[in-house]
Amino acid sequence: MLFLGFVFFSLHSHAQTKNEIEKINSILGGIETSYDKIPDIVSFINQEAKKHGLKDKSIQQIIVYNLEAQKTADLSKGINTKSTTQFLKAINLAEKKKLQHLQTWSEISYAFYLYTYREIKDAYPYFLKNIKRVEMNDYEFKISPAVSYKKVGYFLNNINEFQKSNVYLLRAEKISANPTSIKSALHDNIAINYWHQKKYDSAGYHYNIAEEIALKTNDKLRYAKILGNRALISIDLKKYDEAENFLLKDINITEKIQDEKNMMFAKALLARLYLKIKRYNDCQKYADEALKIADSSPYYKSEKLEILDLRFQLAKIKEDAQEELFLRREMDRTSEDLKKMDGQENINQINWKSRQEIFELKIDAEKSKAEKASIQKTLAIILSGCLLLTVFFFRHRIKDKYKIDKSEYDKKILALMLEKANSENRLNTSRKTIDTFKTYLREKNKQIEELESTVSNINNFSKSYMEEKTTVLQSLLQSHLMTAENWDLFKTNFMQEYPEFYKNITDNFDDLTEANLRMIFLTKLDLKNTEIARILGVTLEAVKKSKQRLRKKYSGMFDELYQ
Image 1 (cartoon, helix red, strand yellow):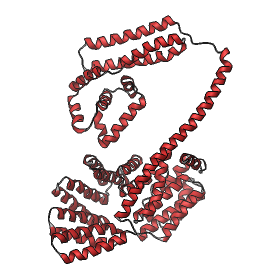
Image 2 (cartoon, helix red, strand yellow; image 1 turned 90 degrees about the horizontal axis):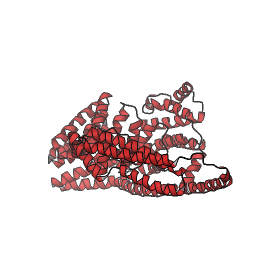
Image 3 (cartoon, one colour; image 1 turned 90 degrees about the vertical axis):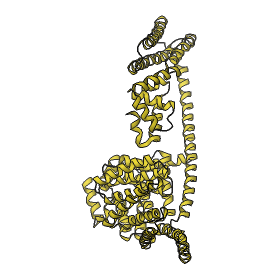
Image 4 (cartoon, one colour; image 1 turned 180 degrees about the horizontal axis):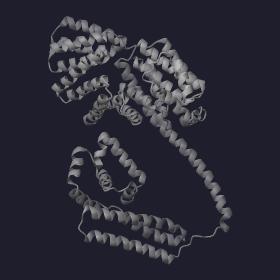
């Protein structure tokens, strides 16, 4: 039923043309992250709509609602009635006019506004709704897609869905312009997700890219954040001097650009580092400074609770009972406040709920596939019935126009057998090098291709002849495939020819299976996917999926597998 619901939604949605979407994105392109600098958004959008030939007034109004809502939220630095009302107007108008892509964009913008100002419980349904659209219906974000994927990725990170978060952040990274501040932020957050998963090499790889882009674009705040985030890896690896250096640089840059939020994070983390290495006076100093910032905004309650806990641990070490009592009461008060916002308890509840929803989403996806399969089966039965009737009706008129002389066909089979024997004889009598193996594999591919063509043509003969020759041909085809013995011989020669390459991949890529090595070695010899599929006796799709799994498993280091 869920599948049918999505079909219904799609059929009854307003058809936003590719040209229309391009016009919307052209208008949003340079302003979605700088709308606060536009004095009159209504006039600006009217001018841009005329310039780009966007005539639909409803679309213009939806854009205006969204941008004005975001601008008001930024100016007020919090949830406010005007922004909430405008976001909801944008969503309702898009839904009423059946503008699906604009509705999605509006819902994600509204959800991110709620998430930014710690109303995560209210944001969650909107995010989940659009995650379902993507997961269930092969749906893609079309309006400001890079920003939309980024926002979903940030939210998933916040509820500890780190692996799923990177799926969306990597989509955003793929389609965002390079180099930009958004691209740098994406790599920074991808790295954070890898850090949470203890994948330090992958995290470091993306931090390097993020840092390079931040320096190119002169994004000082992002560069400072990257330094602070790198410190997290250094702390995990017990490189405390390196972590301190990163954080002091972060603080120094942040003080110059006067960003209080990043300052709070950096000083709190530095205080926690000093507590770990027993520099208690320094810990007290930076914890107090971080707490002062946390007290300045009601949206820093989570951070305040963490800093209070840090000071509480310090008070226990110093055996300051009065300070302990004071801090315990402050922590209780802050915890109560957080229950109304995005405290860890709420995040844990949402995280549990999200896992349950994702599990149910997988079940729904299976049901959707089953419903699709049922529809296809029904259509197949109907088509088969029609075909049988057609065949029955025209059977007496059909003549065999494609008869092939049996003796010629037998000669062709013998020729294929001879070609195989000659090819193997050349390999066995020549000096075994990678070049001879490459020649051998190319010949194999050609022979397999001819065999497959021969097998397909056998259907033109009588049933008894087909049964006899199919067995011969299938046996011959099977003998062409890469056997365990051939693989061992090929692998030995490959290792001798490319010792440094082999050492590099075995040293740097954990858990490579023999199947992985076959795929890597054959690709290294410049064999095409179709050629690899024939040699291994698998489908072309299986080869592609195998490479996709390697790309996913080794992420940023994937290209090194074939260098």
